[in-house]
Amino acid sequence: MATSNKTKLLVASLVLYIGVIFAFTIVPTHLSGFRNPRSYHINVIPLGYSFTCFLQDLSQHPHITTFCLRNTLGNLALFVPLGILLPLVGNRFLSLKRVLLSALMLSVGVEAIQFLLRFFGNPRAVDIDDVILNALGACVGFAFYKSFLPRD
Image (cartoon, rainbow, N blue to C red; front, side):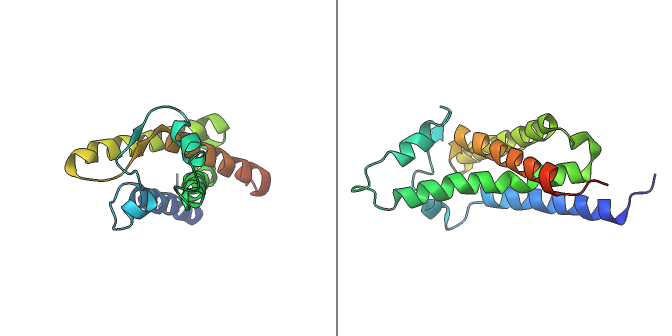
C-alpha cells in the first residue's frame, strides 16, 4: 500500500517533534539551573512538588510563582502536539486511551533517561508531576484534535 505524501509529512513531523521533546528534556543546557533551581531533586509523590512549589513563601522566593507557572504550563504544553499528531499519523491512535498510553510511555521514558543520566552528571530533575502534566497535555491535544480538526 502506497503511503501518501501527507502521511509521510505527518510522520516526519512526529519524529521531529519527538526529537524536540528529547532536546528540551534530556540534553543539558546552560539554562538547566535557571529553569529548575532544584534540578537535582527526585519526586515520586504525585503532585507533591507542584503543590509545594506554589505554596512557598513569596517573601523568601519572590520569583517562585513565575517559575512554578512556567514549569507547570511548560510540561502541559510540551505534550499537546503529541495528542494532535498521533491520531493524524495513524488510525490506531483515534482513542483517548491509546493517546494517553503513548504519552505516558514517552513521558516515563524521558524521566527514566533523566534518572539514568544523573549518574553521568546530567542535572535534570526526575519528577512524577512531569509525567502527569505531560499526559494531561496530550489529552488536551487529543481533545483539540477531536473538536477542531477535520476527519478524512
